[in-house]
Length: 153
Image (cartoon, rainbow, N blue to C red; front, side):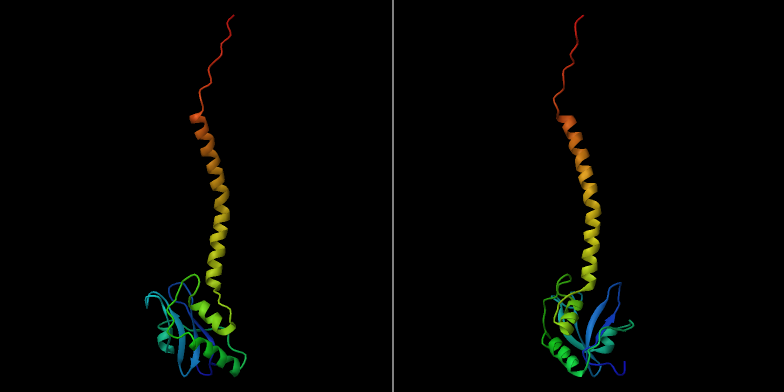
């Protein structure tokens, strides 16, 4: 990974998700290790090889210049030791985006939320329909019987 600028986002893809880190120079990466590694997670600085493990590294967003890169590294280092990992609100991608842009967000979480909302939109009409069927069935079962009226001739 020669020529990699400090402040560059690095991404590996273990087990069907993307794990993000910030390259800080000299073969080191700051990332938010999740619950699997540490209770409460941990923002830590580790060797690039440890970050990658056996996975291929993808290069994400790179800083526009060395000053911007230094600012990204400074922001990432300001959170070293943090243990407030939350899969939906404060994960490794939130951390990297915040370090680079000042905005904490995760496209993986946003995509997941959008998919869940779409499923909910598809399920709601079916739930209403089923509720209507149940309500009509219950109403028939609990209604008082109507007496037969027979006319005498």
